[in-house]
Amino acid sequence: AQSVTQLGSHVSVSEGALVLLRCNYSSSVPPYLFWYVQYPNQGLQLLLKYTTGATLVKGINGFEAEFKKSETSFHLTKPSAHMSDAAEYFCAVSDQFTGGGNKLTFGTGTQLKVEL
Amino acid sequence: DTAVSQTPKYLVTQMGNDKSIKCEQNLGHDTMYWYKQDSKKFLKIMFSYNNKELIINETVPNRFSPKSPDKAHLNLHINSLELGDSAVYFCASSQGLALQSYYEQYFGPGTRLTVT
Image (cartoon, rainbow over all chains, first blue to last red; front, top):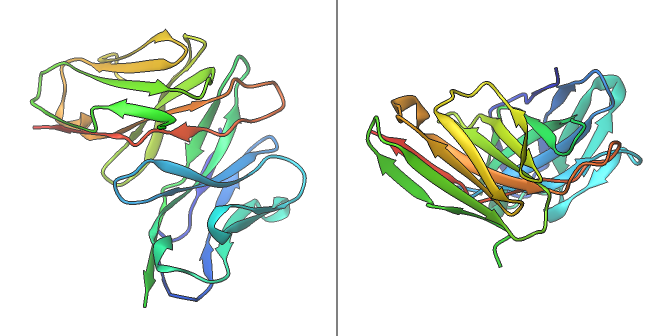
């Protein structure tokens, strides 16, 4: 079974500082990896995903993540935090099913707080 | 235009009641999902349908019964509601899965269910 571990349930950064949200995965097959963001009282929005190819993935809102197979990691970064980045961030790994659809297994989430 | 919509957004009801949550997607996707997010924001898949057929059924009490009248709709009916059913329920959709590819999931805004 696949699993995801997000280190740090709460991360606090200053506006303009580097954002680093950690995600490690466990998978017996090459994984598909995702970062989703959830703003208060809203649904989840895809930030970026890794499927195959280039290991450095760029997403929306200036975020990027690097797939490191040797470290089984997929950490999310942003060079300069903005107040609007304050949200809950979820790392997820997909579990391929035949016959249609993927089952996403989510990490426990990291609440990002951005301070002035 | 809302891609994945859910109704109602909020649902407050008493223990023992039966309630339904509706989900519709206008993306032309083949696969739809229900996720449950608990009070600690942990997200877990409950069900998935592909072309109106059930393909994922996690360990969910049989009081929960999904129904897909057509590809664009996936409803969730819950019988005999319990306090522990209080959560946010998210619907999602994605294109059908080809064997070696992945399609991202688009999430609805969620339905906050409170059982008193």
